[in-house]
Length: 407
Image (cartoon, rainbow, N blue to C red; front, side, top):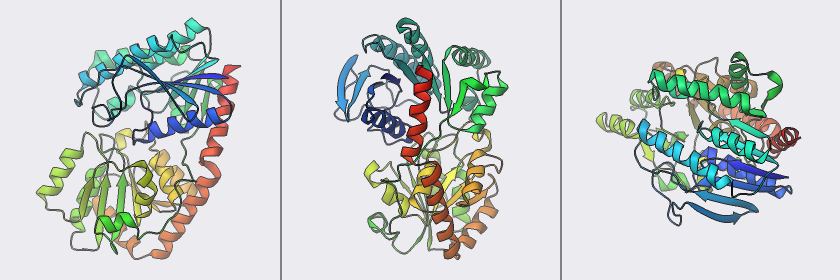
């Protein structure tokens, strides 16, 4: 089967969306499918093209049996709405034109966001006369509205109409969570058009390791109690709670917070830490993917954060990676969120509601002195992810769904 995949990110980006899309493409290719992956030059999260790549109108490469077509897009370090719209729009248009050169597929698999990319998939499906699958990993425009990124009523109305248009025109819609499914059912999407294919962790590459490792040594944190965060420091996170808790915990000199990543809020978070002289908070840029398992292993507790406005519209993949690492989770999230539901089902961590900073600080102190509980929570998470969110388990579900949609 020839599968044409459309997504804005493909490796080497050190972001979960790119990694998972890459792994899905490579695993489908290993299973005998012809996979063409249509993407653009890697530039996330810094807004500049990675070394060794060029922002060309059209280029082709092959990696791990996947044919990768890279096309041009508007790339800028700017984070404003206009910059984002130009980036999404230019890639969506260019991907449609490049898709015409990709050869007729049996099925099209399109990631969202960006929402506009769905238009390219729909038009290509009409031209080729093949079904297309809409893979929804963030609910737009609701996710942008919830974070305050999108406020213009006319633009919100336009994107909402586009969203419903694409739902109607797709052959099938693949979702990351049951909350997403409930959202689309409420919008009138037929239940038989929807399926949930979860995010996953690569349990062969992310696995329990020794806590006192090279990462701790390099950061001069040997012997400390570490709370780790790795990922986007953007509008959906609740990292302000983390810094406020760190401020309360400054007298406990053995407790340290290590925050790894980039994002629109990082500059403000770093400034907050500097203004309050938080010597127990360490900010680092994104680390190489090869160091990710060691980074997770270094944490006594690993953080997952999501603000109340975004809890219904996002599900961070880091949740499953932490479970795979055998480390316990401390989640800052509404208690009715899907994150909380998964943690409760797996018995792999503790959830604290957003804006409960004193409760968060007190819970950290209590967990610090309960090594047995931390070990149990970590072990529970590892077992749960092996059963339900392991890479091979999930890829089986994706392949079956794609075969059904392709007819």
